[in-house]
Length: 252
Image 1 (spheres, rainbow, N blue to C red):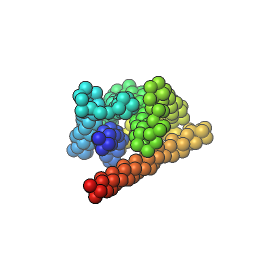
Image 2: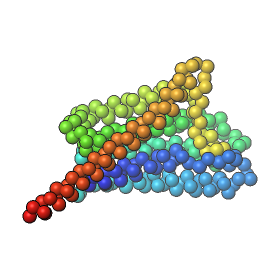
Image 3: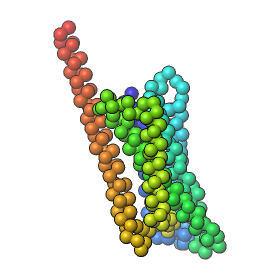
Image 4: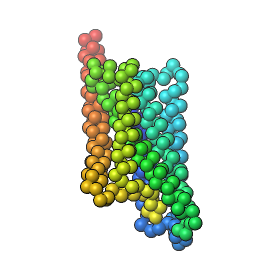
């Protein structure tokens, strides 16, 4: 039962990182000389996108399937739902910006119209990034408290859970607003990456970029440490159970 929780967490988080880490090409794939590279990039991108959509849909189906074998707690289900929503939000910029930009030629007459779409959905990409990051942390914290600090699990019960979810969404909105104010983001089709320009005249822009970069590294590091503690706790309990059963058999 415990392992099924972490299988769900893995399938929820992995597609988003796959989309963020799509291939980097040193040549401009918009040139006619690189038609093959363009279509290979599109093929791999669509495969990753379909993987993300299908895996999240399957996870939602498993969680909300009303079966007597479904033992997931209400708290776990609600938090996972937020991660699924965040993942689907992350797919929108990929569909509405990345694919059209790849197929757009250099001398496109509609470049001015697509520029504002690019920047608008780049902000949505930042929003989805923070929401996935924050709710993944909340999901990890939920498992950590459930297995290691069960006496504190009341934090995730009843109205407190809804309050926590609301606080997380507000924190995501706050981080996204700060990023929108201090940085200009857009998708660069020539190397298939999202660019952030935080080098404005204000010194706060550079400070924000440092905070953003360190924060984006800190949260996964904290999650990694928490999962080490979780798996160590599971292993210790398993050994304790095996030893207890062995002693009972010897006594009999």
